[in-house]
Amino acid sequence: VGSGLVSSLMNTIRGEEEDAVHAIDGIDFELHEGETFGIAGESGCGKTTTGMCLTKLYEPTGGSIYYDGEDIADKSGSALTNFRQNAQMIFQDPFESLNPRMTVYDTVVEPLRIHDVPNQRARVRRALEFAELEPAESFFDRYPHELSGGQRQRLAIARALVIDPDFIVADEPVSMLDVSLRAGVLSLLERMTDEFGLSVVYISHDLSLLRHMCDRLAIMYMGKIVEQGPTEEIITNPKHPYTRALIDAVPVPDPTAGRERVELQGEVGDAVNIPSGCRFKNRCEKYIGGVCDSVQPPLEAKSDVEDDREVACHLYESAEGFDPYAETDET
Ligand code: SF4
Image (cartoon, rainbow, N blue to C red; front, side, top):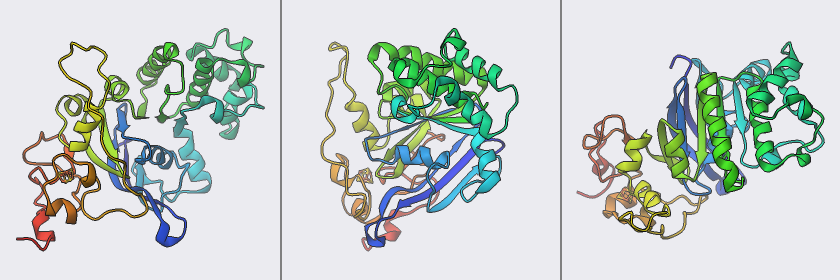
């Protein structure tokens, strides 16, 4: 897909074969040039594993990740190094992701050294200035513990940008920050997307943040995408019962807003012993019986849902000819 990125992954983190944890299981999405794409879901749904597979920090056990028309899933050596120049990750905890023994300058220059990029000092200065760590040179010799939480995340952003990547995965980029610092870092991320023409994958449990930042959205549950499409459509008119439940569980800041928060009931299922049929069935308010128990609903277009949306739920009519009843013993 041009210089977009297509992912079709099946990642299984293996212990003993029979105890395999299905962190990601057959997910499939596209990230287009200049697009912002959100991945939402509860803890343990596979969001972070997806981000780490996209940047090749995790090795998927199967599937493909196409970048610029080439499958990078099994790349290694110099091909992998070249890919890494274009794919950067910003982590949730800037303190953990930065080496405490490296100064600001060494932290930001490291990717330039690895990829042997010229004009390193000027590039480091520009990246720090862009991240509003100014005057840049006054930060060069400082260590991460000498910076505030917001400054550390700005440093992580400068390090990701300095190599001029094509896409960035930002995993819960502001969740560890004090609320008063979040707006500033989010506006920096927005500016980064606009000015560098980047494609960005935002990973978060915070639907308000994703609504603000993302063109398109995928909702994950137990290693699978259960709904994906344009962000605004999904938030204002969710189709999958899990998406609905996530939205209903968002706190309501204004008590006169006309709706009450509804807590999501039940626990996420066991990622080792994956249940048959729909993985959300034990928490689903719309459960319709046998077919939900026996047939795993595929993520697909539905004839009774907007064209640009895909949903994995038997409540809707398949637009692709998939007949769940053909796969059950029921008549
Ligand atoms: Fe609920 Fe069945 Fe849809 Fe799963 S397939 S979300 S159990 S209605």
